Length: 413
Image (cartoon, rainbow, N blue to C red):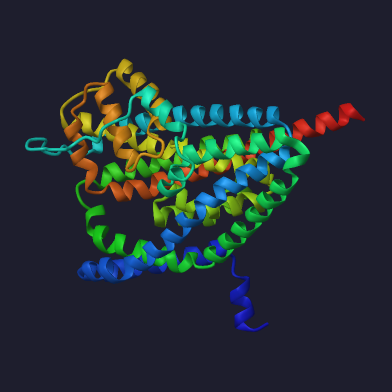
């Protein structure tokens, strides 16, 4: 077998892993040339990320519509939707508890940074009613242009339901939707072939700029967050996929590896969605469940962000000499769980959610300035948790739907 054939057979996850290692090595070697990395390497990573973001909107729009059409039953769509939201809310609540527990355990090792002269301009947080109103689009084109994922999901649901209700007259539209879905899936395959190059160009500048900072005063806070990220994935997701998903956690994490590595490099849940979708299909998830659950998860599921908020709340409180009470911690759990949906689609959602959480328990919002400098490092890890949570939900619901269909078939026969 030639070396070219061997290279072709190298799995995407392995290619991305090699690119990640090379990016870390190159970034550490080029720390003195951080400006060069930012100016001449990062743009190629941005181009790749732009291509992924370009494909996400049509993938979400047509894959959800195609999934609804293939289900042929509006009640089944409602059942899957309810299970998805309940799963995401439960894992988010677990995540914030893990973050608070981990932050409390590491509290004695956290540095106490000076809090004088801190300034932080909090982003405006939408009210509950504004959030509800903003879910529903007032324009067909604007959500596509602005990549407003919740609104695109609503458009997909309305169109998908309408096609089912119209019946035979909609058959030409069904053919068109399925055809466009196949075309954009092929576009996604073409773009994903560039993943190793994209990962290298995205991660190398981050390491070059932040390499020395990671070893600085916030090292213990970062370590606490990453330990909590790992614990949540290994405990919560492993338990979920083994009990509800009917598969080995080892098989799940192996199948999820390419998406996890890419998420770490890009720090973009939406950008990682095409790779995540492909991984779920390879692990045996049904396309109709994947096409519905993943876009929704990339928008509202923020387990990693919830862990980050728990750890940072404890750290910021300790810097201001404040001990959080059990009541305040319970308030953080509730606020963070609801905020994960309330800030869906908001740029810099992690910071917006942290602002809401700190305000809810009376902690100074200025404390965000203590962690803002290395937010990108936090973000890389929390994105991995977010997209892995999305995939675990897909595998669980896919298995539950398979069992439900099998029971129906058995009862009918």
